[in-house]
Amino acid sequence: MTTTREPRVADDPAPNPHATAEQVEAALKDSKLAQVLYHDWEAETYDDKWSISYDKRCVDYARDLFDATVPAEELRDLPYERALELGCGSGFFLLNLIQAGVARRGSVTDLSPGMVKVAVRNGESLGLDIDGRVADAEGIPYDDDTFDLVVGHAVLHHIPDVEKSLR
Image (tube, helix red, strand yellow):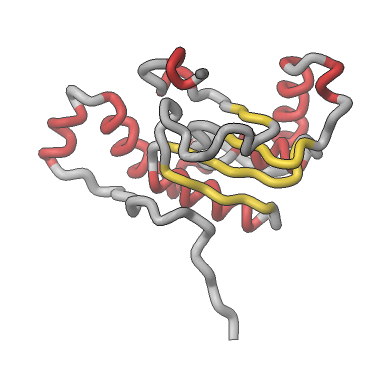
């Protein structure tokens, strides 16, 4: 008998792929709510829509981008023990970095419960040690010094107060 277990996601709100008219109206004045509604709606099809994968092509892309961004002396300490991706979407960047040997374990956060669920599921399908939480980049739900590395990929334009999120 095969059992399917739910991905390791903290006790967060459930994804809502069907926004009400009232929620859509409220989202016109609340950019974070707009992000949640859109990304919950897209979560299950997002990887296909954007040709996201976890194969050699994408592993190499993530590693090349990481190597081009991080000072060479920092690369000597690889792999990092624990990494966090803010605004993870479906987990593309962190999962590929872990596969590339940049980190051993990872945590993902996103405003969208649907995206967190997909990211954790993607990580587990790759056999990676991943957990996820629904969280705002401006209020990360982890203690200081929990992570050796914090990354984000294609996320800054989704954060209303970037300066606050970088503190």
